[in-house]
Amino acid sequence: MTTSGPGRSDRTDLVLAAGDLGTWRWDRATGATVWDATLERLFGLEPGTFGGTYDAWVERLHPEDAPAVIAVL
Image 1 (cartoon, rainbow, N blue to C red):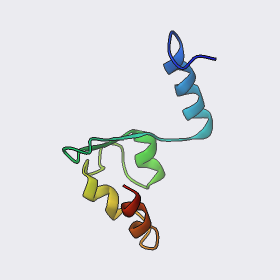
Image 2 (cartoon, one colour):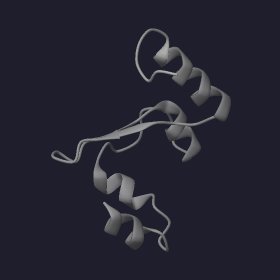
Image 3 (cartoon, rainbow, N blue to C red):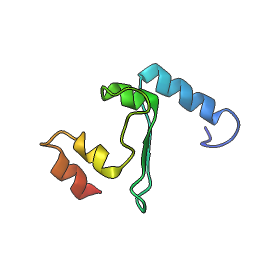
Image 4 (cartoon, one colour):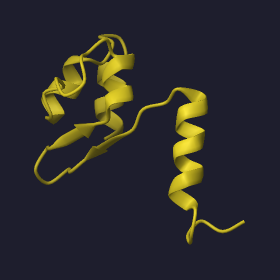
């Protein structure tokens, strides 16, 4: 199995849809954070309403999990 080439994004989209999974990207240099509509929905947000920042993401971490998660990053 290869990890690149034709159809890779189609397979990824299929897996994400089947698992009802969302995706996100974080630019560590700028703090910009992009969530897709599925991830927003899973967090109870309307599509396009996530704040788009590292701080907005941190605000959504469970308070008991936040220190450990932030320490790893």
